[in-house]
Image (cartoon, rainbow over all chains, first blue to last red; front, side, top):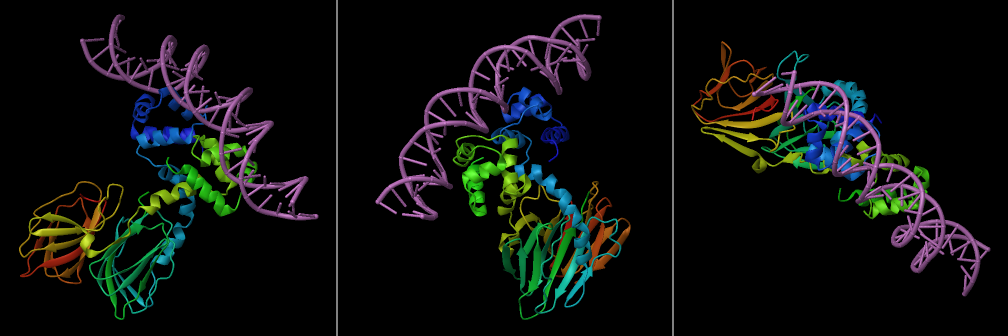
Length: 181
Length: 181
DNA sequence: CGAAATTGTTGATGATATTCAACAATTCAA
DNA sequence: TTGAATTGTTGAATATCATCAACAATTTCG
């Protein structure tokens, strides 16, 4: 694990706060912030939580950077799996998305069409609105069957799956933001 | 910091370890594990890390559950947040997009509805697919009338305008990154 | 049954974190 | 320049943690 103090220091700088101002918000002493950032002390969980709260960052978010590197490894996999044919037809809005931040698709699923489990590891978001038919959407350990008018939206890093569980064709419009940095 | 002890206890039970055995692996005293699990002490970050290491779990993984549990991925049509702007109705997928990079809208234009000239200066992109009706889209000095199945897509920094030129309602699904409101 | 091992808990003690206050260095405004 | 405010850093005092050892309760096995 990278130096906890260095990480905190960087985060504080990012928010544009001084040690004293942060300490005041968190209800701790400025000396404590100084000692933590310089690695001269090993703060308690509760204290660290108060400081992170003052920065508007949860523990999960604070440590997300650690696993971010790992998620970046799967980035290519996700990219390659995105475009495929078969029983599913993707109509992409626009042709050259190489320098784009937004991808919009008009998707048509034949009856029974299934994307299978896909693990897109890039830091992106996606969502969509169902126009016709019945689509089973699975995200993580949650699963729902959506009908016309319903919608979904989730971080792409979560494992997800789409399956047409209706008797007819399923049509939807989806959007996805590729990684911004 | 309510259930840190409870969470650790559950995780330890899941791994089938006793307090003493876990303590031995982590190089801490069994009393410490007991005190943490019962919430009678506030352990230091370093100590907690040693314990989590002994359990084969990173900080990021340990806290990952917190941020994922609350997230909502599915929205019934009636749950879509309504943003009304006169003759134009926006149904937004998701309610709080403050930490989001993607906004998806289900839009309904009454006959004659017009957004007027608008220009977003920030670096964003937007696009959409027409589902019903006839929509005149003006971007820069270009203008087109789109019908069901047609689509558009452009950088938000360009001046643009939407107008329902059909006799009936116009419906579309749009996406924007980052959110404009 | 009964002895030995293992479970989780608790009080006293040494170790360490946290605070308070003062410090020099820097920035800002008069 | 001068004074006031802010920056991050330390020494001494206090509060808290982490440990050791002993405890009762339970399980294991002869």
